[in-house]
Structure formats: structure tokens, C-alpha cells
Length: 167
Image (cartoon, rainbow, N blue to C red):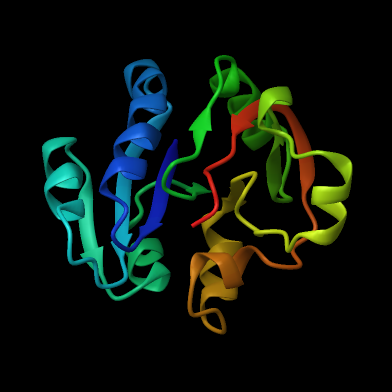
């Protein structure tokens, strides 16, 4: 079972797009719960989360990890969308691996070469699948989901993600 954590701040539109791509995982029984970790939104982010049946928590990623029911966590940026086929790949990974994993960027979502070289990479741009135990340990020193994911060695999944546009 997988818990999805999405850290937000004034991202109601992006959150709705991300939640829509998770519906298949919920129908298949892979996604156990979705937790929206809010960092002080002033828009309608909480309403989007509540209408979609998500748990809405304040207090950062640590609070979300504490409420997660799954043994594995999927951390996503609001606005990121998982492509078809992600469910089987994540299930296979969590059944055989103990290390974190990231999705592959969808071809149309990839920036040109020079843009990739000279831009700052967002650690959660490709999402992150990590065990709850490892995420709990990392969250003690990380103040955000981005900080938790930064510098973490991860396997590349054979499933694609449409990266959220930069803010």
C-alpha cells in the first residue's frame, strides 16, 4: 500500500491536476491515502483537497509522514502528473526494493539540453517513492519535502511523469 504526500502552498490548480492522475491508483487499491501537507496557503487548496477526499494537514512534511498509513510513500509536487503505467511499476518496485526511486520524465516534459545544464534542479520534479521508515528518519532534519528528497540516491523507474511547471 502506498501513501501519497503532496506539499502545497497556494497550488489549488496544480493540486487538482496531480490528484486526477492518481485516480487509477486509488481504483486499483494501490493508493491507500493521499495527504496534502500545506505550508500556509491563502487560496482554496484546502477545499480542493477536501473535495477529493484527501487528508489536509498543516505543519509540514513531517506531520504528513506521521499520518501516512502506507509502508511506502510517494512524494509529488502539485502540478505533476503520472503517466499511464505508473501503478504496475511502483508495485513491482515496492515489492522487491528497499531503496528510493524516481520516475522518468515524459519526453514532452523534458527541457532542452542547455536549459537542463544551466537550471537548478528541483529534487521532487520526478517525484519520489521512499519507504516510510526512511522518510521518517530524513524528515527529522528536513523542513520540506524538497529538502527531504535533495541528494537522495534513487533508482529510476520505467514509468513517466509530466513534471510540474516551475513556480
